Amino acid sequence: MLRRSRTRLAVLGALSVEPMTGYAIREAIRDVLGHFWSESFGQIYPTLASLVDDGHLTKSPTERAGASQYTLTDSGRAALVAFLSEPLEPTRPRDELLLRLFFGRHLGPHACAALVTEARDAAHQRLNSFAAIRAEIETETGYEADRDYWKLTLSAGEHAAHAAIAWAEETLASLEGFPTEGENRLSSS
Amino acid sequence: MLRRSRTRLAVLGALSVEPMTGYAIREAIRDVLGHFWSESFGQIYPTLASLVDDGHLTKSPTERAGASQYTLTDSGRAALVAFLSEPLEPTRPRDELLLRLFFGRHLGPHACAALVTEARDAAHQRLNSFAAIRAEIETETGYEADRDYWKLTLSAGEHAAHAAIAWAEETLASLEGFPTEGENRLSSS
DNA sequence: CCGGTCATGTAATCGGTTACATGATTCG
DNA sequence: CGAATCATGTAACCGATTACATGACCGG
Image (spheres, each protein chain N blue to C red):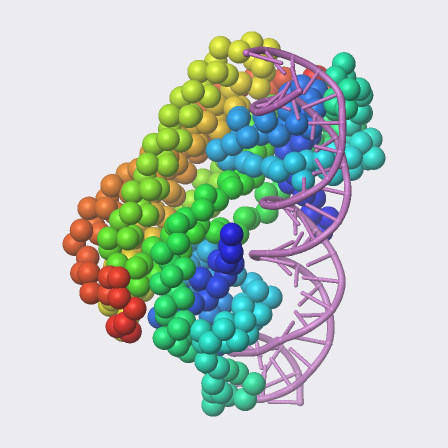
């Protein structure tokens, strides 16, 4: 199983939209894919070098000294499609909020409510940023072919955020009825 | 920033419910926390050893040769509470389905629909397993104090699954209207 | 000129998985 | 007895983050 790194997919994908520098790739991932993906510089630059080695990208200088622009080759586009076609291997879930809530008895309902409130507010903020991104991709020209797909991922984020908010509200109401036996104390098995 | 591994939290939490062997911890995490958490043996055993070193657990032999039972100490319980009280550092999102969908133009609407269908079916399966877990924790005795918190995490899973299903249905309908220009071909910028 | 942004890259480290090795116990 | 399950642990590896080092360019 040659399990390719997903960073490669993200980088190839980003460059399928338009040629960019490594720095710009990271910016694009943070600003546009931010709600479902992330990459760090420490991962992007080695990946770019490796993709150039494989012939999937070409590196060319820009006007600006020290900056290089990377462009997808035909081989790179083929690699992207091949990657996209691979079966999705199931991700191992790791939701730290739920992990804490699961053991919430040791924290008490009050502190748990604070965690849930935080999560709810974060979901609201995400919702706001989705609206901004939606407006942005709607108005910018040049990405017509991709735009419809991009909106699907936005919609996924919106559904998830709405669900998170609804759950948080329910949970906050429910937590009010919880007994406060162990709150702020380290005793009681 | 002393960023403690979350495996420690999961192990301490698991042992806060009842003493167990390392093997049983992994089973419990897989079966009960499976929809929002995962751990591998390779992480659990070293963590157990380290927690014993720190005085957070005691290791005692069982009737069965070669098997050890781990029990939370007072120090361990305090460490659990301390851990639970730490601020939640934001998780970097990595949703491979959405990453693929974002670059879905290169795959075509048909293949994208297959991915989304897969995700929808997986959400349905999760919903089924939630019902089973709910029935299980409802009937088993001895966990009355934790049960209410456990249900909160189940509810979160159910909300998320319902949202995923609703989004998938909408997306599948939407994908039917997408042009199939690049489907199964490697050409066309 | 100085601070902020654009830009590249590497080294140390980490958290985690996989694969492997080993062996006891239980059940058919 | 043999297979499945229970049980422990380690070594190799990997993907990724963090911190650090460096420097060009631009605007005030």
